[in-house]
Image (cartoon, rainbow, N blue to C red; front, top):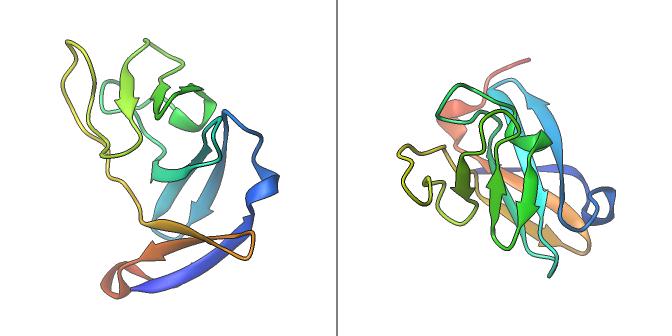
Length: 109
């Protein structure tokens, strides 16, 4: 796995998100109210809504298009909805956000 620095944790407001464009697609990076961070693909499994524009609550995000709620911990839809989004490994090192990309998925931009 290759760890890529994408910026400071302080670049993301609490209960907010940012989108990172990578050669492997758009990744949504979330910061919860209690300063946990998560990363998923930036695409709702329902109709492809941009999850980075959704509402972060607890450890979940609500899609801005149709209200589908996605767990940020495992990428599964909550409640009566079905579907999953791919989660991306993320960690904080000295205040910097690092996302993990499998070496076989890294390609030139």
